[in-house]
Length: 437
Image (cartoon, rainbow, N blue to C red; front, side, top):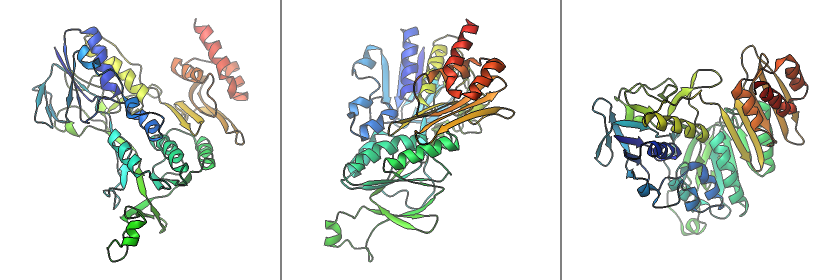
């Protein structure tokens, strides 16, 4: 039997290895479109900050890892999928037949339709090639503009700020929304993260839109010897929605990602309203013998039962295990993806779980110490904790995930105790665990 896996990130790698464990004699081919050995995008900020070398981003360091496991790696991009003929056409002209296919192509960065986005001084931060481009531009004293303060943007932000700050440079972060990380944190938690980031030297501009980016060339269009000597020929002028304009050395675009599924047009694989591949609890798509896992999917939300795109690596790895097991002939199922975000910003750790935004008919408790940058909010539906947001605390934080995922009923007594002091969630979790034992 031949298994073809499109995507050589963490999802594809985990699935391939899981299939190999259970099907030692099957053929496995993994397709990736970057000229790199399989690596983790989550390691790129550490590379930018100089904490690791490029080798530190690799998912598997042993060069013989793939040959020893008889997993073939093909460098190409999927162009189309014919689910009737059971074959994949690649950008190099090769046609791969398959018996079972896994779609694990992840996400792609989204760039807003702003004039100047194609300039060489506007870079994304998604691939190792992007990271190299950023490192080339991080000259001493560089003034950097970052577009986007979502989850990915905040991870990049720390690495860039720490790097430019050592040489007298600066980082300005622009976010169109009314707050940082609006899709993973409550307004109060976001406000604390912003204050902490500004304390670390980052200029944060929310509710701000970039309207144009232009090459900073002297009037007349000629580069004078003096202009060249100042090494400013690559600077850009950025215009904002309020009519103002400022100069930066380069711009990092971190305005979000979307499922990478362009190659599926005409394939018959169902794409959902959110732009992801629709899968069931076995990670099967609507096409026979085709599975999907990771950031490119629309899967069931554990908390709401609705379809969602849950683009986080832990969720991708869980889905890869389920998909791999089923491609190997098993009957693994997922209970649904849990929204789970863990963000470290200049040493301040923030987390959110489940329905952190609350539910209709539910209630909540919120406790904040702005001076200490401590915050906790628990969301209830009846006597169950269904969501949580925490800033500035790491110990026992997994207990919150446990309370939410088990759907433990606290009873009126423990709910009232948590509403009086939400920091007692560990005690509530232990009590609920004992009652289930």
